[in-house]
Length: 474
Image 1 (spheres, rainbow, N blue to C red):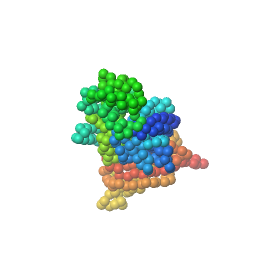
Image 2: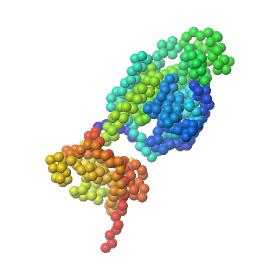
Image 3: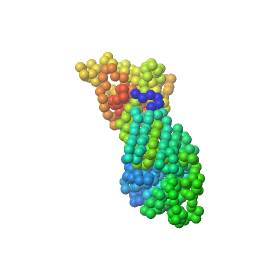
Image 4: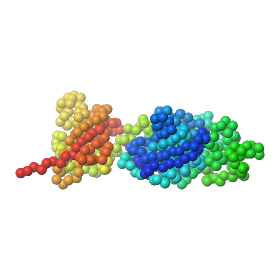
């Protein structure tokens, strides 16, 4: 069972309007246009290649990652999109859960090498709350990833917020060992987003010789010079980038580029961690500590976190039941709202209720009348009565407050009903009903789940109608 800080529900968000930006892909050298559009709840982050036949889509998910060499690339349905990490980090940092990203090329533009331009266009149109709950998942235990060959160590610790610490150490006399931290995602826009990517001068020469950074520019990356270079080498770089003033400053940074932060490289690695871990596909909270992270290790770490969440997801849906807390509705208050009476009143109390969901309790004892015939010597609560108990919990949520109590509820439909474990005497049923859509014309669409302890024993989608009783004429 989860404590209060292990289950955190907020609302999902999307953009208030579409927004766009254009730029050059650092590896492809192609000018690319991207348009960010609002998307429905539970869409997630989806890329759409509008330049390809059929305009195929690919969801930003770790399962779709196909390459992590110097950037993160995803592919599905014949659609490939690369260098997504800076945009992904911006979406996380701005709190955007659902967005459709139209792109007319293979690579997200590099722009200035940071997330700041993406944050700017998102803030220009703004973010709006959606009518859908956002459930954050937390960890049951520490999750670690180690790559001894690359000296990478990453750990995710159970934590009530999203916190990230990074360390980089390239054995570079210029960079040294750097640390960066983000205590809360709210710090991202001011403290992390503008941190630019970086590379070393000797790497730059190799990339140019192998035609791997066709869209590179000395102004969209920090170039670190930590080994002696000749004037001829600098001139060659100057010619490639068509710049006349290329030089190495005293701090070992090419072209006298002023750092935005003393530890900007470490902050950018933190930015990459946020962008890559967004591919987990589930909102989660944890304290991430990453030593010498890179895209390949980030993605493998994301796979482990996703696997953990999927394995324990059902446990985090278990409502907390503290019998010491007073009920929202006791059985007498329930009788005043529901038309059901003995022996067909199947909920004992309501422990939690919001506009969107209700949680009720049913204590199952040997004295239940149905156990006399279902089944003698092997007492099992009938599944249809479990569904009826769910429906009654839903009635508490949906029936209007009315001093005359003139409403009845009627089943219209039950879908996706599954019974996963037996219910026997001594069990305490935790009945959770969630509205799937707002109530319209008395029609209530709800998702119901029954828990015993941490086990799901039954679940179903229910549709009911709230009907006002006709007035009896005397």
